[in-house]
Image (cartoon, rainbow, N blue to C red; front, side, top):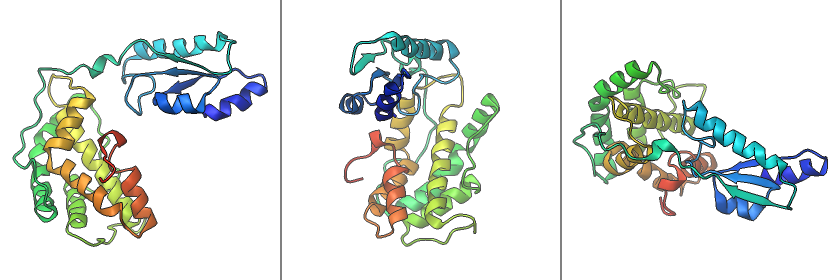
Length: 242
């Protein structure tokens, strides 16, 4: 989109881009761009904060008045107010953190998921919604399916509508959503970094997904290799080797 901006400008249409990755924007050099210090997926800042989001939008739109160029990059001056850690927050208590051996990890994952059930239900009741369910499986079924992948081989797809690698992708998405929503139960408002540090560093589910990414990055199946590399683990949590 940043490169497309130059073509639109040639047709007399002023453009401005929102940048989440400053280094990439510096390389592409769009006509105008506002870099924002927010996590990927939140170009306008925190959800459910229309005042803050409006501030971001208006700051970007005011850049349309800039006529100098050929490329202008400015920084949004405010951080996401929800990224400050909430010191009141305590993660759900689990007994399975820290395992690294795939076979043990599969069993630990299956045991860990039910431990979060009460926190998850409390969170759904508080917020009145959930995004768990992409795979079409119950959360325990999703856990068993991911565990089957950890135990080796490619388990058959439980549905005729999706391939096994695609079900794996959505089952992993369901696990990440389930754990995140469970972590949001209660009055505290943890930052995404607090939740991410807990999930990826302290849970069997985080270990399981990191292991799956590492294993299947070497797959001969192009779809599986793409899913492992692009969808299982956020870039900020992935290392070159998995």
